[in-house]
Image 1: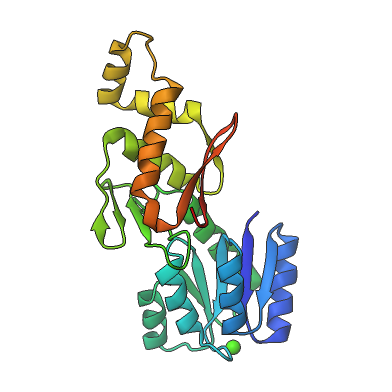
Image 2 (image 1 turned 60 degrees about the horizontal axis):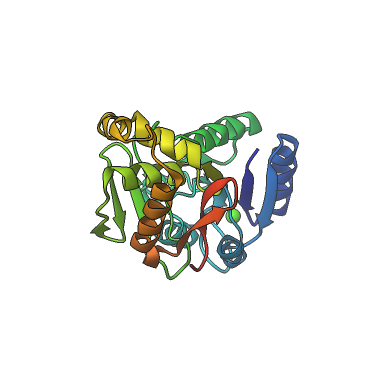
Length: 243
Ligand code: CA
């Protein structure tokens, strides 16, 4: 189940899509034009967007470019009646994850959508993962798990092994709580870290050490607009919002 935004100015199609995807178990919001879509995207966190290209007030391509500047990780599936190769290529170049040409059948839409959402949830699957800035003013955080490297805006983010492991876990589970145990076992799974941890007197890395790394990572992410929230008794949560 995902929270989806359907952006489509054709009332019949929009209603049909909303009904179908609600029935499939998703939670669905709708927008009938580009500006309304942008307003919703600014205020609400979505797992995926179905985006018509021909829209009133603000064109679908402009919405897509706007999404890619601010919400890099948000999967977008384009719905288009523009079936020229140029339009499809332009859409994919502007950062769409997939597209469907109208008319399409619901079964194909569902299959494409499910595949897109699955890819976006598995950072290791495509080898790379990108994530948005937490606020419109924040610099986008980009994480590539396959390299592994991270950037804030255009600047590489210098991270120690432990900071990297912590950041990867938080990013892969953005919006969900990552437990202290998960972080500690990720650290110990790392061969170099495992040896270091095994050599310590207690045989494990303490929670105080974890607090120190969280604090450091918070400082490094300061101008991303992303916040690492301490959820008392549970763990940590990476979320959007002013720090
Ligand atoms: Ca349209």
